[in-house]
Length: 118
Image (cartoon, rainbow, N blue to C red; front, side, top):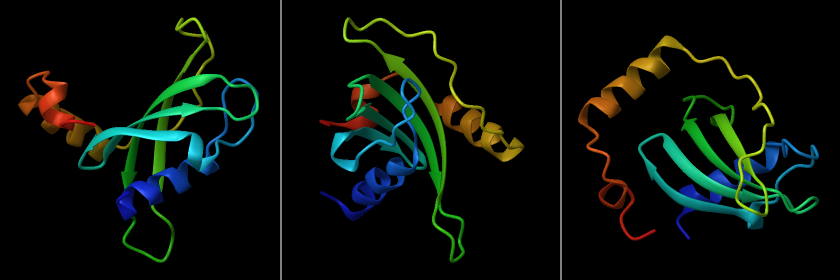
């Protein structure tokens, strides 16, 4: 596993499950793929076994502090239905919107090309 993926998995241990509030364990975080700072992850809570999909902007803060994780999560029940749990609120900076706008301008919707064979 690539060192950046290990770091992303380790960073996800600071994130809590939206269902039971337990912290995720790094071995229950699967990296689905990423494009620059935007990472897509699948997580399973070790405590309540709920599953979620996470889109996270992980950017290097260029300092002695650890990289910042901005996480958007969607819980999925065992039956694959979306749960009505609200995701935690994280402020979005204007630069984040501009970065996403630039990314989407050139994105053709082909996720296979974006993530390869992950």
